[in-house]
Image (cartoon, rainbow, N blue to C red):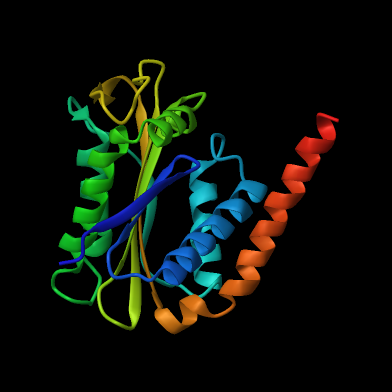
Length: 227
């Protein structure tokens, strides 16, 4: 059974990796995810147009070699239902994974990785502080959870669930507190993708170098700013 190996906070997302991936595969998958995020950030304001942002994110991932299995991003209403990230994300990822033609255990594995990442996040004070800060928006709060798992020797799978809460009464810590959605609006997204391991590694060095260049440019700009 694939289990959670490590997780990180990237922007407002919890990105989790299952065991069985090499360090190089984790790095390559994370960098493809980061690339899609940076392109979407450049083209869309996520607060103003989350639907456009996630559509662009998904498009970039597909352009970079991932195969789309499921995509949705819509407004939703959960009348008189208390919302928590874990129950909504779990439902969304379950929908995304229902159409994947893979090993029978695939949905359970990817959902288990997401669940363990959510449970363990508060134990890392630094990562949790970053997450709480990044998940707050002008309209309320937004959380996404992405699980990566290699279910055989040849293919890496990604399942992602997104919950965007838009209400003046939205909780300050979306991850923990319940929220009655009847007093506001939510946008919910579900994405499922896969990529061959060989294709995952194709161009990984170039992508890594370019992303490091972007980071170095920003770092130098900050250093120039402070003199």
